Length: 249
Ligand code: PGA
Image: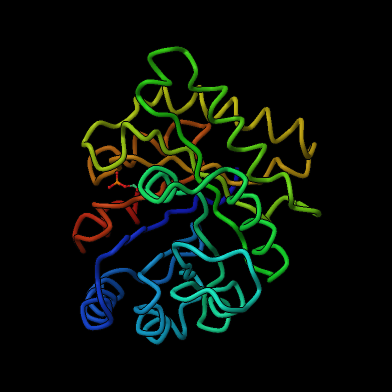
């Protein structure tokens, strides 16, 4: 079985000062654990503060929540993969539902970003997910697999550990409504089969995470679903106590 990946997406919360305070209290209570990988996605301006707190913690990796696909240039307000890497990021979130639905990011843009991340030597964490409408009209799986195929379409040399996928049903994000373990398992099985078709056995160790209203009460049950290789956690990662419980799940 893959080592579980438990990821915290802080979204637009925790500036450098509160990020430092959060990490101090979290690390005090979370000794090194090598049977799982923890990932933290702070806001980009807090990355340095979190990186400083992790100098001798190789069990916890850092990521950024978004990048531009160009390597450099006149893109005011944007962040390149090279800048993210230089600041200590190893992983980049791509295609999060808030990027897709609030900022209008298209699947083709996620593909450009995944290619840039590969070029820059970091790991993309590609998020895919269906809306409630798509679920109700029986279109959930087609939507998710299309987002997956398009997002990965410009990557050239996928090896097993070079990507992470997260299934995040849009209707479960920040709503308090979690997918049932069966919903998650069904979609994860479809994603796994699609990765197998695209990349063969190399994809067997690609982690497929679940995200959407994960909290300290449901994390263990979701992880117990054989198909769920880890969790992507928003709201519950902002509270040190609940994040600790999820991280230890
Ligand atoms: P949530 O967010 O856990 O608050 O639902 C998950 C995410 O957006 O990645």
